[in-house]
Image (cartoon, rainbow, N blue to C red; front, top):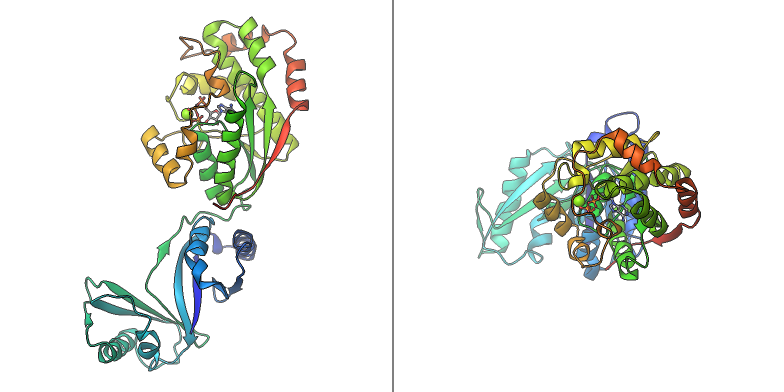
Length: 390
Ligand code: ATP
Ligand code: MG
């Protein structure tokens, strides 16, 4: 009896004219994600099936599939030619060690002259005959035996329906440039936009030697973790030391963070446009820190001319963000204690409600800033981020 993994996809994006586009993209993403496993992906009647894989790797394949956006759920299943008189016999030896069960039948094959309920009770009866120690419990069974009778004379039997993230296939919603710090929030922001189908590129501002090599390595590590969801991507590491020193030299102390963020977003937009990105993504959450008040966000926005800034965490509490970061496995890395460039030269009392006009005046005080910006962009280091497949 053949073992397969049923891969179901969300229906929402499959309604319109673009159905084929989404399906093909999802198939490509599934194949990419499973490329390290020796398995075959088949498509049949609005589903994919992973087949011909090493059974010992089944759990690992399922974990990988759970990270592919656009998949609704997966089920490891037995596959055989439809014959309802044989189902019990075929699965009897494969049943997990339980005392109670029920059979649930879905019958797409209308050539069979029995209702789903009739088929279920027939198979249930057959199982009871073969396995005297089992009993039926329709309401709270330990094991639900799902029998899926498809139109193409194929039947699948499975016990589990493992929920996935759903979302949209990565690549269906353009490309965004994620401002990736070493903190908790920005990796989660990247994950959330990838879940909506966005391809991710990332940018990191690095202030070596004020921030350490480990700080950069930590960001690369975070990139590698999120790439198991969003695929491989380039990380643009921008040398930011000279700009930070200039801010320190010329600007009012309470405006230093504001000006720093104005410059960061300006550089990010320039690099994003050169990389054909259609948006910037940050991990900002309203009111979380002084630079994330409505006034501060207004100042940051004022430096961006062409791209939208997407802030998927804007309404979230830190506890909610931490919950996701634990779930996607970035938390432990995010809390490693290496300094980010935002935490050096930190003013004691950053302005909480900066005015655009004063912020611009402070920005304009920095002599030679445009050259410094051009220089930073010229010296960007590009790191290719790939999933480590831990
Ligand atoms: P995070 O937890 O993501 O580090 P944070 O709590 O440190 O965020 P801020 O320092 O205000 O908050 O940064 C807000 C957002 O600005 C971050 O979520 C990130 O998108 C971006 N950002 C901050 N520092 C950097 C950096 N060094 N390089 C790239 N982007 C950054
Ligand atoms: Mg934050």
